[in-house]
Every structure is written in structure tokens, then in C-alpha cells.
Length: 277
Image (cartoon, rainbow, N blue to C red; front, side):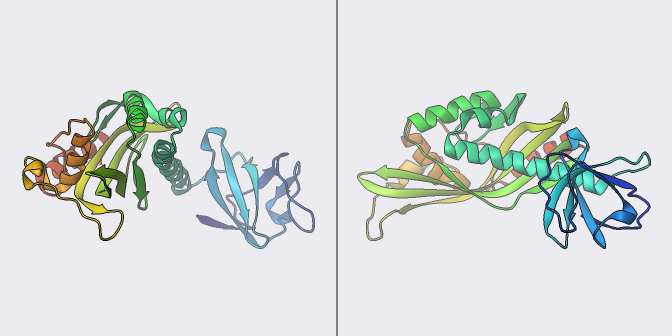
């Protein structure tokens, strides 16, 4: 976020929109224009916001109040790093919204996160974004209620394309032989996102699998699973594969995972090439 002094030549005039709810007593009022020498504060900060409408968020430090305004000077140019911050924020909210929508069953919102030609490739699914939403609805109808614990989002911009990644733990309750268990699968989600018609949406979704564990939900309870039942499953998502198989899913055993570093490197090279990173 950049800081502009009141005599900064890059900011000539701020128009305050009519929708602002700004009080009196020294704060800016809706429907008025303020030149830099009339600003009521010694400095202010601006952050790009709603770039499709060419608006910026003006944050007044002293009063901690917010209002939407437009820079109207003909020679004003918003710094690229501020525009990049706006894109990073929009992309971060996009991928978080996709995950939350899946957890909460907000299927229409989830569907709107994907481009029409998007792809999703996970342990139990390989298809389009729209088909992934349909598959998620079917999974919920089968009684598989996965919840996701998310780490911080890292966004790497590349023009109208960007890569977003974050760590994830997938928690799925499971009952085996009458024993309540919790499956926790650790991984990293990798999103390719693309801006089309000034809107960011998901172009692809992949997961890098790390490890998983299957533990009793109630301490002191146990379940016996024969080692032979785990044969053929990858170490990075062995218990996940087992639980999904018990629910009737076929699980791809050739996905990228920490137990096969070359598969992770191959996927990330493909994504970097797509984004021209």
C-alpha cells in the first residue's frame, strides 16, 4: 500500500461518491470534490479496489474511516503494484470462496468460480469444473462430508494469468467396523486462474499430496485394518485412497505427491510454462 502526502503531485483531486457514509467533524462528505490542499488529514493511503469500475479505496488513517472515491485528474496513474495488490486480493478471495462453497454446499457460488473450459484433477475426480461441482453434490449425497483446513494463500501474478497455492488438510469422518474415525489428508492445492472480460476465475485445480492419517474420533477405540487392504496405495495418500475406495470411488494412483517428487516437479513445470513464469 502506497502513502501519499497532501502535496503529492500524483494526486490532484478526489471525488467522494454519493454512497459514502462519512460523518462530519473533519471527515470527507459525500458528493463533494477535495483538492489536495483541502484534504483534512496530513496524509492518506489508497488501495486499488473494484478495478473493473476504476475505483479506489481511500483509507483515512486518523479516523479509521473508509470511503469510495475516484481519482479524476487527467494525469493521475495508479501505481502498478497497487493494481497488482487488487488482483492478488481478488484471486485469493476466489480460491477461498471455491473451498468455502464446497464445504457449505453453496453449489451455485462454487460453480461460478470456474471457467467453462476449466479442469479439475484430484484423488477421486478428473473432469471439468462444472462436473466437479456435480460430483461434489453426489459425494455429499453419499454421506461423505469433507471439510477443509486452509493455510495462507500465495498468489504469483503473470499478467492476466496467475497461480495460487495454499496448504490444506482435508478432514473426512469415516465409520469402519462400527468405529468412528477421522481421516486427515495433508496436501497443497494449486490453482491456475485467468482473467477474462475483467473477471478472475479458475482455469485448473490440482493437489500435491503430502501424507495422511486415519485416527479414532474417540480415544481408546481401535479398528483393525489388514495391511493387505492398503497394498497398491501411494504413501502420500494411502489412507485417503482406502477410505474413498470403501465409499465406492476409484482413486488415481499416479497423482503428484511427496513420495514421488518427480511427479510434483513435472506438474509445477507445466503450470509455470502455462503462466510464463
